[in-house]
Image (spheres, helix red, strand yellow):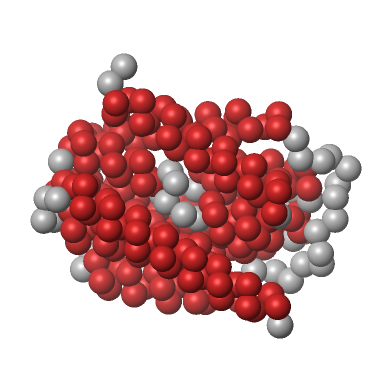
Length: 258
């Protein structure tokens, strides 16, 4: 088994497992903030770079950046439906909205900086689109470790599917698919079932600030991969994303203290 396949099979699932456990320890806001970090898309783009080349991955990274818009649409749709309906209606509605958003994004032909500006604008507006919910109350189904293997398996399947289908889909669509809301569908679905709709909505709302770091990661990666320096590109992208991630955490902490 080569190193690339090992990366596909173990890195993203392990990271998702870690985020899940952290969320159980510190709650939905922290879980959402952590899950928006490029823990799935990063390994996917890295394997694309190894297998398809830096130019392919640079274009894919721009597609992944644009796909943040579709994930935000998914999150808002799920939250608004979940405020008064169950998991099935919420998930189906959110996936339908996501599909429509992806179809629109594929027609978006703009430089990466314009895409970045659109994503930042959407991130600023999105928190105001979530429904107001009371504090989360337990549903009588406490979180357990029984669903952790399913979450990790979903991440592994996504990494494998995107990596092996990349050549057929092309770089842009591959990049968009790399941002499929795996964390949202798996993490939020299980949370909705076990801990109620208020907890699930809080989790989705908590993801939004984390997408600033994700957007910075994609922007830096797309620009530096065009220069062909793979190690430097991923190192700089993750370093910049980490800096933004902790900056958003600091802002969140100050806002909660008010």
